[in-house]
Length: 143
Image 1 (cartoon, rainbow, N blue to C red):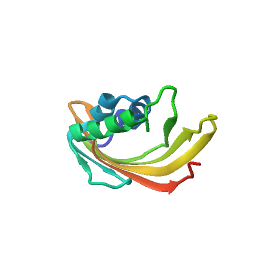
Image 2: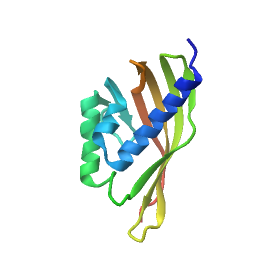
Image 3: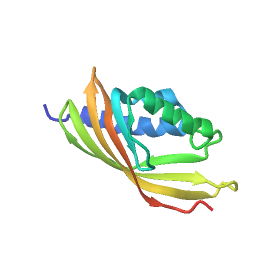
């Protein structure tokens, strides 16, 4: 079965939900975007994270350290329009991302430009990440 317009929009919603969850500091919502046995590969190094619990623990550590999810916001993920290919059960998505942060004077900086390479699977009517690779391709200065 081909990827329907509704499925296409649901995958876009998944990408937006990921960004909103990490930026708002909601580790549970972030992890809920992934399948139980999902894998998250990060360009920042380290072994890939295997399983929803490991992914949740990793993002909770980022939130606890103050790197993401601050109030007031100090960082935002802006995702572009994805290229989505697949069928009604499984698809791939390629999406560019720009991360913006703020210095103490609230001037905007762009510390990272990259892309997400995703495999998404529809289970029980909901799309989730099965495998996400985060590619950090361009790094800005943080001075």
